Structures are given as structure tokens and as C-alpha cells.
Amino acid sequence: RISYYNGQYMNHEEMSIKSGDRAFYFGDGVYEVIRIYDGNFFTFDEHVDRLLQSAEEILIRDVNRAEVVEILHEIKDRNVILNGALYIQVSRGIAPRDHGFPHLTKPVIYASIREAKRPLSLMNSGVEAVTAEDYRWLKCHVKSLNLLANVMEKQHAVEQGAKETILHRDGVVTEGSSTNIFMVKNEVLFTHPANNLILNGITRRVVLGLAEEYDIAVREEGFTVSDMSEADEVFYTSTTQEIIPVVKVDGRSVGDGKPGRVTQQLQEYFNKKITLLNSV
Ligand code: PMP
Image (cartoon, rainbow, N blue to C red; front, side, top):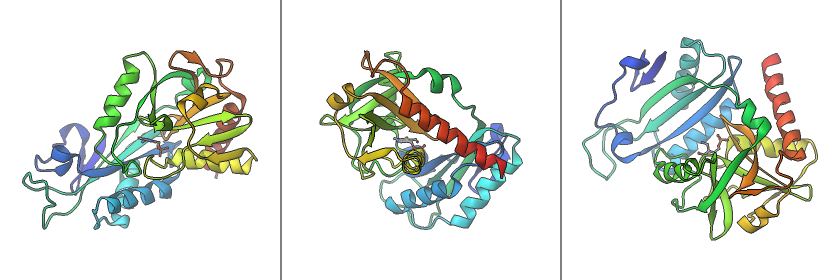
């Protein structure tokens, strides 16, 4: 497996990371995960755009788009992984440990690829989720390397035998620890608006596009944990998980306790979209 770090392509197992990398001390950087289906990138430009926007938001300004695009293609082409996930991160640079931004350093890019199968069985059966307070910072729209709160929130689910923690601020559902959350109530699809309190997921955007295309009513507005307990359907989305039905929240069944009809339709439209991608 060939990965990339700080200007060099190398064998993943032989790679060593510079100890002064600010990603290491501070989580001072941003990242993306991009899906590859049958050897083709899915929503490539959207991910590259978001990476550059995240970098800009934390004042890492000298990321070269052409360089990023080249690294992503090189990593895909130098590895034989047909269905995978490509991870790329950009840190502020390599320098002695000091909170203030270093002078004269350049952003440091790391990229690697792994095989990633579609989670077909979870997509069919649905999963259980739990809820917890969202205590993250107020720049959740930045895809920051600093994932400590997300890690803690995910573990909260793992320890209860659930797959995801649905986060809320003062009762209003924001997103999952690593996913976006949707609910369906009376044939209307609800999800939190894309502001500073959530990451505007690429899969979230694809789902909203599909809803528009297939005439499903959408309201991008906050709903509460209590609204969600009365929902007909709940699901979450992410690049690697796609669309996963949530059939239980905090031990209580959602709707009739099975993956919902609108959720299944969206899964079908999503399938169609990735099949089309690979037939051109
Ligand atoms: N929210 C958070 C906090 C995430 O970490 C992720 C996945 N990285 C998402 C939402 C989903 O985003 P995407 O669909 O772009 O993978």
C-alpha cells in the first residue's frame, strides 16, 4: 500500500511522521474522506472544495488545489483498491511546539487509501442509536482533525452496544458523532440546517439533491429529541456509511421498528446514482 506524507510517496508500513507536525501536538489541521466505487471517485470536487474551505476557515491559506488533486489521483492510481476510502489531511506545518502559528512553514499533506466495503447488512437491517448532549466547539462546519469530542461521543454509543450517538444542543438534534441525522415525519424529510453547528456532509447534500429530484418534501430546520421520538423514520448519512436506517433511539423503536419507506427509497436512488457513476 502506497501512502503520501510531506512530499513523498512511500510504503505505508515504512512511513514515519515528523514529531513537529502540528497535527500531532494540536490536531491543528483539516481532513477529508473520499469514497471510491469500482475505481472511480464519488463526489470528488465537493470533497476537494470542502477541504480547501475547512483549511481557509482555520487560516491555513496556502493549500494548492492542483497539488491536492494530483496527490489524490496518484494515491488512487498507485494502489489497487477498487472499493475504498481515501483519507487526506492537511496540517498547518512542522515546527517546534508553540500554540501561535509558526512562521515559514508550509502545510503538510498526508494521504492514504484503504479498502472499504459498503455496509450492506446495516443498510438493510438498520441500527440502534443513543442520544447525548453535543458539547463540541462552535465551528462544527470545519472538518477539523481535532476530533476528541466526536471520539468521546462515539464511544458513548459503543459502550451501549449502539452504532451512533445522535447529538443535541439544548434538545435540538444537530448531527451524529460522525454522521448527519435526518428524520421523516408525515412524509416530510427534516435535517438540521447547514450552519456552524454541523458539518455539511457531502452525503447529506446528495440526499437533499435526491429528495428534490424525486419530489420528497424537505425542511432544513432543527427538530428536538422529543420530535425525533415521534418520527416515522430516522436515518444517518456519511461518505463511508451512505444511508443507514436508525430503528431504535435510546432503546425505543422508531416508527414500527423497521427501516422506513422513505429511507429505503432514498437508498435505492443513491444506489442508482453510484451505479450510473460507474457506467459512464
Ligand atoms: N458529521 C460529522 C461530524 C462527520 O464526521 C461526518 C463524516 N466525516 C459527517 C457529518 C458526514 O459527512 P460526509 O457525508 O461528508 O462524510
